[in-house]
Image (cartoon, rainbow, N blue to C red; front, top):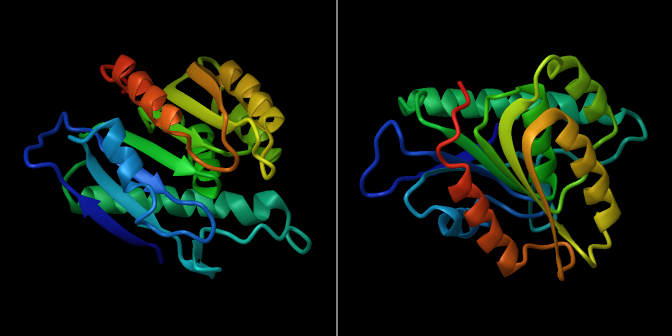
Length: 215
């Protein structure tokens, strides 16, 4: 199962947001805490580490879809991450705190999946260098029907990203705007990574949507 690490500010209460981080392939749960801290250094952090060894780090799933389809490989992982977060939050008696998600690459893909599979569960989601598997559209059509989800989503895509080119980001952002009330799509002069301006813009986005009511 996944490993995790909690980080608490000096003072917190039921209004203190929780930022869950999920790293990309070959990394670990030490990768994204600095980004989360820059977005809100007074938030509680739950940093998750994937369970599959991959390169120098870990992966939530191996993107090999020759024997199993994307939906067979990825959807169970989305549910597993959701259930893991729910369990950890309950253990810490933080079920009333606003819940946010920050992911890079594979972690961002899971964050987008959580947004569609569990509408209005997360207050804000920050997606850095992601793509949207084709089956996400069907899932979103099934779960988000009458009204758009209130989850606010910030999307960052690199102009020179060779793994997930900006056209991929543009495409899934266009669909996200059909399903979500608030979507901010942004491109930066970077490859498959997180530009410093993306972090600053994510912070501004977070602050402008901080008082958003989900439930």
